[in-house]
Image (cartoon, rainbow, N blue to C red):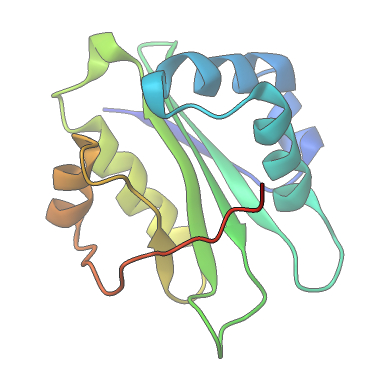
Length: 148
């Protein structure tokens, strides 16, 4: 059984793991879908912000004392426009995949998120099936305009 901790402040996170270790774990275990460490740090800043319309939480999951997974959820502050929460990152150590840890982590995060939750996933990401099993549905195709 996973030991899951929810962290809503930097102080709470530091009781479990250093911020650098948290960032390094996500950066490593997101594999080819990873963002830069700078982007991960900015998402953490957003989750820990007390500014109006911001906030969220981080989650750590340990198996037998070893870090097995992490999740980062932000609050959008826009419940009337888009879902209130965005699951920004979830990563499970490759040696712990296939054990149901991803589902357990997501379900625990949903319990702590107020309102609806959305996420972005690439069509070829194997985790897409996990998200569907947990209950996520495809509602829209995301389109982006990139400036040169």
